Length: 432
Image (tube, rainbow, N blue to C red; front, side, top):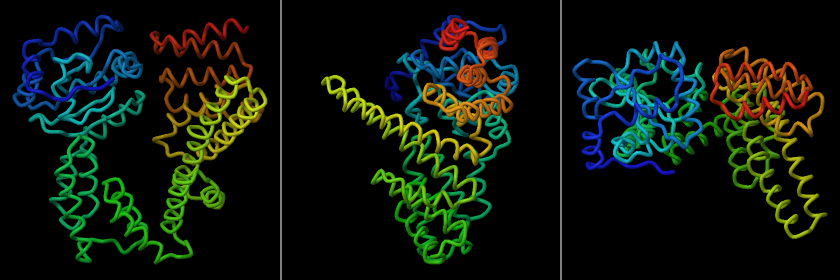
């Protein structure tokens, strides 16, 4: 479903509507007695209260149809530590399906739910979390934002301190685009462009620093400047003896993969690479190609041939799909070995669930590997319900049914409203 842009009529309607519908939504969802203390006035009253109290503001955008929104309300927004941290904020909840309660999706560039927008007490943007995060990661982000690391005001302050810094303006441009802004990001990129064209202004001579600059230029939507930095690295290190030189080669191979669906050059580079960040990035792309494109295309061909009664062709397409899924699992295993700590939990959860979906084709080694990953992510976040559920899936695939039942029940204790886990638990119990 689409989100609704800001209109004066919506703001006027909100002023009349007040906070009643948000209260009703929370009552329907139920849960522990301690809940977020949502601000019950209008959005304009919220901004006025922020200015008067000098308290920062948190706006939560959600929707009834969004499973992830429901998960956030059942888990993240019921966590005791999260609730304690949110006491510092004036919190406001917006159901994006209720037209008169949508004053700011357009203003803050909200294009998906759940989304959390952080504002300064004066209502100016501070930061944004545009997607679902598990509870422990949400807490990490709350801490980062609370200490002002990487926020919009911090980036502006960095520019004020060092006018020659090329990275801070690009990071600010990236952050502002996330808020749906375009004019100021364009001006910031132009300012970097002018300094680079003058041949000074802090342009790095170190190749690793130049690689960082290239990445920021790419993310800030300056493809010509990005290409200039990539080419400069290639000229300085044609034999790829530096990390930056290898990084550029891998980036080129990823571009080749996107254009031609040929993973060969990228795979050849990755087999020789030892840098964890580069390995993770590259193998994640190989996994995505195999799983999210080639395997899906093979599945579509299988369905087409089956519908035409072409059993031999359908069987061949299914065999091709299975092989793509196997290759995707292999790439996942290699990516997992070098996954950054901040991605390890969610990457591991996805990995285990994909192994579970293909459990009929797994080797004993793959079952053991998926189980080891599940054990690791539970150790990372013991109170994350989804990780307990993933652990239960890995245990079941490994034939440890009673232990799988135990972990599925533990997941439901942490998130009693997850009907998928409840159904899975019934399947596990029936398999005893």
